[in-house]
Image (cartoon, rainbow, N blue to C red; front, side, top):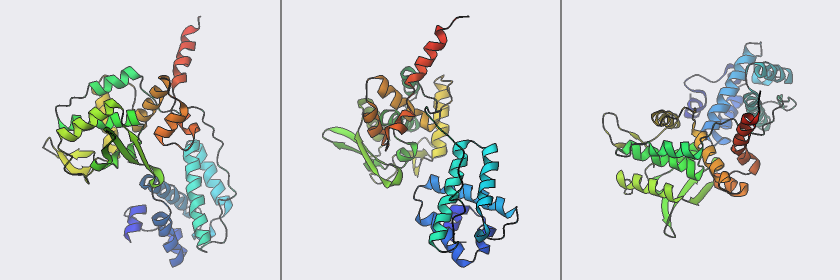
Length: 320
């Protein structure tokens, strides 16, 4: 199978329903992942969702992708909503709908069977990602041993996500040249979703962390190399390879445990922590949205946990 097929469906062959649809369906299926989805995480999520759906259809007697009907999509989404969360179900429906839109445009199928199917209702007013209060964030950063390259790297990465609200994917995609001086200040350049470039000056603490990392690990000479790198096995030195997102997640968990922080942290926790601290310190929602590179302040508001303190105070005010 082609490299695109391997990138979208792993080592497995194309789904049976796609193969049964003929050569045009197979080409169009591969083009959907190669040409329409630029974000690697979205590509993987959509591939899993679509493969699950096509496998489900095959198990119910559907012979080809052209035989998929609205009743199949509706029944699948109904069963999925009983086992999975509403956001996950809606993501699966979006993946199926986008695929069939692409197949319709390619004249593989006449109509999109998912067009009329509605997902489960879902409304979010406050995000679920746990955040650290400012003292815990400081505790996490100060507890890192910076006498090693790993410590310098980890403090710089955590600081970047806290102080610049960077997405972990954008942070790990940075090259050394993406931390640069402008007007006597250190700036960072982040490639956000959709390939959009976001540039912003560093907070003075983040500037100190990045400078210490760049100088302590002698990275400035390799401007085109990845900024955040793995550690070579058996040696306390940086490799030439980029740090993977899963490794960053594991690192944050280890650093939090060593700092005595019991809150379960994820990569997005640090971003939400920075946004909440910014708003607590009098920053505006509009400025936070611009720094986080959100298209809407509604998205930024999901990371705002200032109301958690009000909830806590209300609970403590009651009496029995």
